[in-house]
Amino acid sequence: MPPHAGRVRRRLGRRTGALTVGPWSPDWLPDLSGRRLTAIRAARRGAVAAAAIFGTAAAIAVMLNPAVALDQPVLRVGSALLVAAGSIPGLALLGAALTSSALDSRPTALVAALAMGLAAPTAAAVSAMIGVFVIVGLVRGIGPGFEIAGQTLEAGVEAALGIAPLLVLASSAWVLVVRRWAPHAAIPSA
Image (cartoon, rainbow, N blue to C red; front, side, top):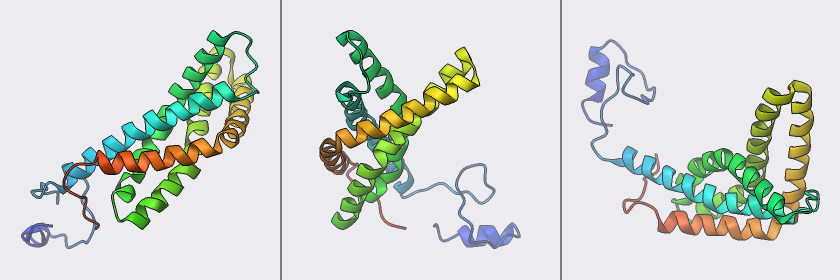
C-alpha cells in the first residue's frame, strides 16, 4: 500500500483496514508496483490452461464412458465435445482460483495440484449440469430439466472415476504449465 494511503483515509474521515478492490471505491489508489496486473495475467493463464487440459480430459471421459451408449462415432464425439464445452466455465474458474497457489512454493503447488485433481471433476460436472438444466429447462420445461441434469451429474461422477489416473496426470501437467507459463515476476504473498 502506498505510504500516503493512510493520510488519504484519515482526510476522508475513514480509518478502516478494509481492502479496496476497485476504482469505484473511494479509497482506491492505482497499483504502481504492477503486482495486481501480474496476478490478473497469471489467473487468466491458469484459467486457459485448466480449460484446455481438463476440458480435453472431460471429452475423453465422455468418449470412454459406457453410459454414453451411442452407436455412431460421430454422435459420441459430438456429445463429448458438447459436454467439454459445457464444463469449460467451471474449469476455467477453478484454474483461475488455484493459480496463485500453484505459483507459490513447491509444497503449495503440490497442494494446488491435489486440489485441482479433486475439484476438477466436480467443477466440470456441475458446470455441464447447469448448462444442461438451462437448455433442457428452456426447451422442455423445468421437470425434464431437473431429471436430465441429475443424469448428467451421475454420468459425470462415473466418468471421473473411470479416468482417475488421467486426472492425476492432468493436474500435474496443469501445475507445470502454470509455473512455466507464468509471468516473469513472481506473485508475492499477501
